[in-house]
Image (cartoon, helix red, strand yellow):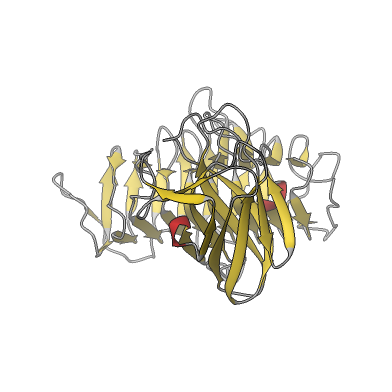
Length: 388
């Protein structure tokens, strides 16, 4: 997924809209404060490819009512409600799909009510490009995780993560809390994470770096394997996890992994990926092997999408080209203000005793009306799972 960002204060034209810095939490050099009804800004957005792109508007609305904005892209107008965020220093996101040309697109954003609009911080443009699966076929234990023959040694107890470093052949034990400043990154290749939850910053806004895990193994965690935002996990083996495989907040790529025996903890209700109000999450080419009724495990869903505890709405989520087995409903997707920004495309569901012929307890999906569901099939028979 290609993401480009335009700061709202970079608008090429403003009408009854001011650039301000009064309320904290904005990115860039400020934000836009809309005047009354009819006030507008014209912002130039860059799309990596022509066609349908996803726009994420970051905003704050400290009032107790929605402050709608009309977004005009190429003559197509979409009304976004922009609900309250709980304060002028608390920022949220809403999303919409927009057909754009490759390159620069002037977008007009207009307040539609007398009270004016919210404060607008930035707009992200997400290209619908899908990364290819990490392997040519369905991931397995043999094709993921640490490459055979790799020498593994224990990471030093004084280990401290450094930006720009590639770590290889290390084993980490215990809870890890790794955070990097925005613009910094680190990569782990052929590493093992045993008995720990690799945890990222919970509330750092956009001030986070990037962590990438390739051909790693995550096992024996008492909670989820990886938690947080701004991370990518590829071609890795995830097993015997007490809770969920991944908790994805935002800007997360989960690609080509094999996961099995999740939810081994007492009272667990495990998901392969859980998204609570998150955004910019891509789940592609994985095999989540979570059959129901297996002793010592308790699986809930392969992917579970819901709103956040503070009212955040999930957006710009792509689930494509995966293999799924088990769960109550294999995919649960609700609470998005713009349901079409959740896409469930060309996945395979193993056969079983559910009414729709899949291996879930109740069925392949429990999804909000408007969620994109297309070209999903039963793996063994090729049966098309029609949209609900």
